[in-house]
Length: 54
Image (cartoon, rainbow, N blue to C red; front, side, top):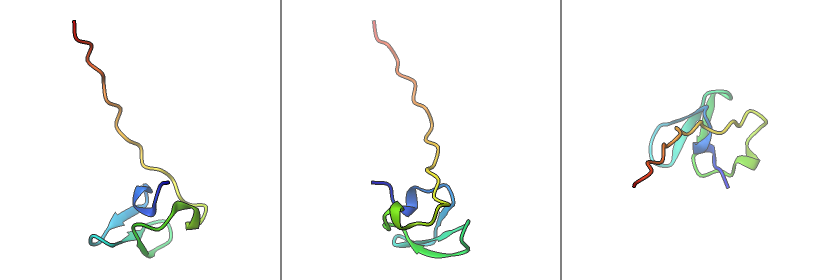
């Protein structure tokens, strides 16, 4: 399950909490994303190229 820290609007303050940019207040980083308002959007993870070995 994704958590608040997996959201693109989350900015870490310390290990436990961060700021939700879209809401404008502090949230716990491990909060389940289902408890977040509709503004939750998953971070885009960089694509990793697979190198084919011959």
